[in-house]
Length: 243
Ligand SMILES: [Zn+2]
Ligand SMILES: [Zn+2]
Picture 1 (spheres, rainbow, N blue to C red):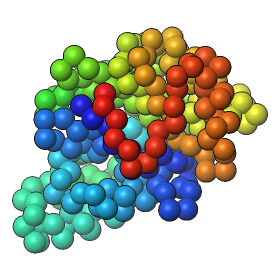
Picture 2: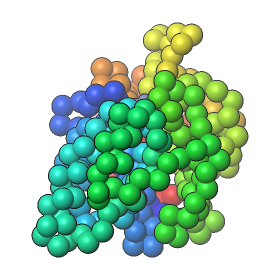
Picture 3: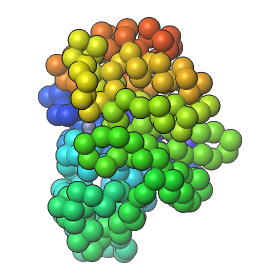
Picture 4: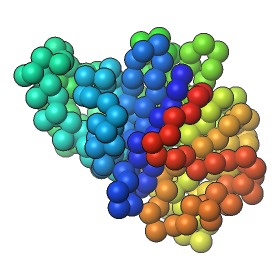
């Protein structure tokens, strides 16, 4: 499996960049993970709509799915010009109803609702999902193929479940949206310090950090993650990683 990053910011992009948008590729199939604002532009700089074999969304906050709404138009045009002949499978939560309804109503998006513990085969990858605490219903996801495992946290409030779900991942993509100075008791996201700690508890072989707040200096975030997980790195846009 290979992981490509098209967008890494949240909850809004840095100028010229994109919010959460990744792609896991395996056996000639491309599965988009999140399609945040600016992600479609970054994706289309290298691929076409016909290259999207499936989409997985951790949750329906706009910084993770905003460009799904524009993708509807691109899919329609691709159908008219014959470059696609059927809808794209979209694995996503079915809440909140407003956002989920917009996706489910599109004839070229075949939505599959997620629930805690849901397991499926997406092409030649075994995929499982775990519900994570966040203001919108959110899921961490685990992809396995050829004895390699990739785990993505999605957006997540601090909890003890994520480290268990991510156990022994070869590559762990983890959000670390907050520096310690901005953490409070009701934070909707992980702090960089906790992200590092969870990566260690999970025994992840490699860890990439994402959901970078555009007003932060990424070096400050990474140095906080490295208090616990020394080799953590910030994911980079337009870069591909072997799982
Ligand atoms: Zn987010
Ligand atoms: Zn969110």
